[in-house]
Image 1 (cartoon, rainbow, N blue to C red):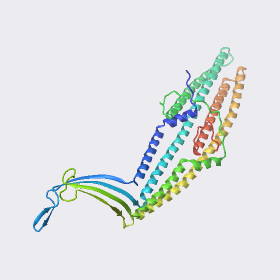
Image 2 (image 1 turned 90 degrees about the vertical axis):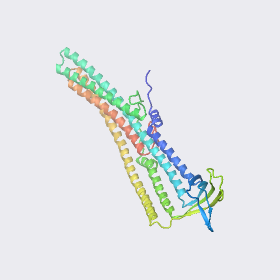
Image 3 (image 1 turned 120 degrees about the vertical axis):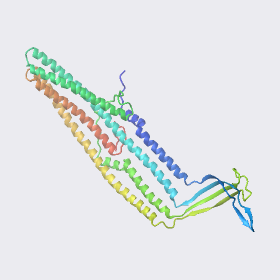
Image 4 (image 1 turned 60 degrees about the vertical axis):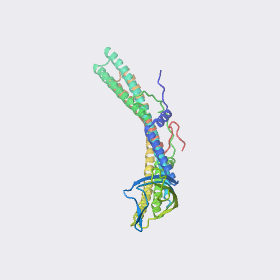
Length: 421
């Protein structure tokens, strides 16, 4: 049975569902979400238990009028339930919660960036397979043309119409075409291997793809792609989030200037047995409720230095954003010019192909009439093969350049249907 040909959309779907790097980034997002939930839960009250066992060599006692009165046993057992509610920690708990939420968004943008990169890589690999596949077809056609010419040359030589060296030239050209076919087949196998890896398949798995090289993309105005890039690129979104995260870190550093207030409650049991059920020396159980306030008064300017460092980080991220926008603008410009150059290259290649086809037809006809030599035919055939290969390369380069432009503009899509900017 003939193998089913994969469309580009099918390849993209398979790559996005099976790629191990994306699975890793998904796990990173889940980890960030768990950390965000943990930061939220830090604002909730906590309950802890504590159990202690203490053996005293000598009993604690007090001497009254020369007589000893024991205050404890040799065995002191204490069992506590501790309740703590963070009433106010200088806004630090809310800020930490927001920072963890920003980490989730940063992880999501990292995943989005990986998806964009994978889409471009699958596009490029797909077009490389098509280019190599057509290259094999052209190599076979060239071999067939040279085989036909070799048979004609042998027949003419047998009739005494041409010299022996023209037959030898044809044989050499035919052998070179056989070698070129082997090279083209190896290039195709390697291109298929690269696509298989992106699809998370075995590198030598059988694969065939639908030929869409002839579909030419529609190019919009440069400003359209630039505007989309500056608003859609996940790298820009990530730096914006990093800037916001730096501002939150400034607030977090400032929170150290405030006092911390906690509401505490303790249920306590003391005794002389392992379960603290008996205490002849005092209360067996008790409950304590109260507030605890901690306030750092002086730290030799450590908090001020941390706030200054956090503010400097904000300035760093703002400068990084400006630099990133400049670099992305240049990247979009370069990709746009590459598409325009590829379009011009394709027009030149198509014009050259028409000339090469006519040149080969004329030289072949002249050879049959005895007006041209084998060298003329072989040269014309080499020009024809080269022209056809260059047209194939121009088609693939145009598709790849357009895919790179979409990637630079932050447009994620299956490239058969260009998104209308």
